Image 1 (cartoon, protein in one colour):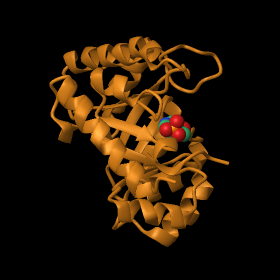
Image 2 (image 1 turned 30 degrees about the vertical axis):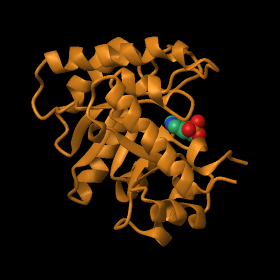
Image 3 (image 1 turned 180 degrees about the vertical axis):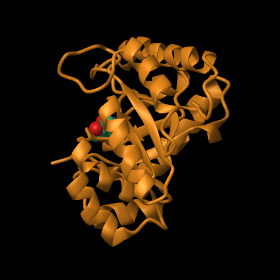
Image 4 (image 1 turned 135 degrees about the vertical axis):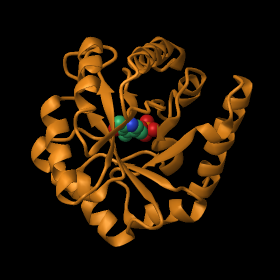
Amino acid sequence: MPTIKNNFDEINQQIVDTALSCGRKPDTIQLIAVSKRKSVETILEGIKAGAKHFGENYIQEAIEKIDIIGKKTASWHFIGHLQSNKAKFAVKYFDYIHTVDTLKLAKAIDKQAKKIDKIQKIFVQVNISEEETKSGTNTEDTIQLAEQIISFENLSLQGLMCMPPYFSDPEKARIYFKQLGHIKERIIALKLDNVSMEHLSMGMSNDFKVAIEEGSTMVRVGTSIFGRRD
Ligand SMILES: *Cc1c(COP(=O)(O)O)cnc(C)c1O
């Protein structure tokens, strides 16, 4: 049985190899270890293995784990669907929120961040495949939302996030990753104040190599590090 350490090292090696093979600097890609539905013990094993960034999907579950593990040894990324009425907790516990997809949610996060004098790093989540059941903005709304977000003093827009449909052949996800990159370029071309837009949060266990080839700077990998979720 491979350990978490073996898996983590293996994924890191694959990130380095993929980056080099497409002419990118490996250190421009961050590995987010997705620890949803995994125990505190498992996360601590991940930290020991060298993981520094963790992704969580459910606020209540995350609060319980972060209260025990703390924020000094790890940075925390919220990658699940966020309801506006939970914005307070997301702001208190998470360094990054990847899933901002409405103006209402952006407003709620800004308000809560203001209260604790924090500049909250956020991503706009794009429903890149335009599936009706999925969270995220569509392409045109993404650009509008980015323009609106700059007026919020306590939000810092880091980039865009997407989650294409699952394909057993990861090549099929490439077109979606490419599209996310194009939207990012369109936003950069607007030269908005205080918008760095340096990040693309894309790629999971199954498709992170293709995502890196298409410019991902944050890959979110769960299963390949921690094993299957119950
Ligand atoms: C669960 C999840 C992941 C990780 O998926 P794996 O296939 O386990 O690597 C990445 N991103 C989001 C948004 C997720 O919900």
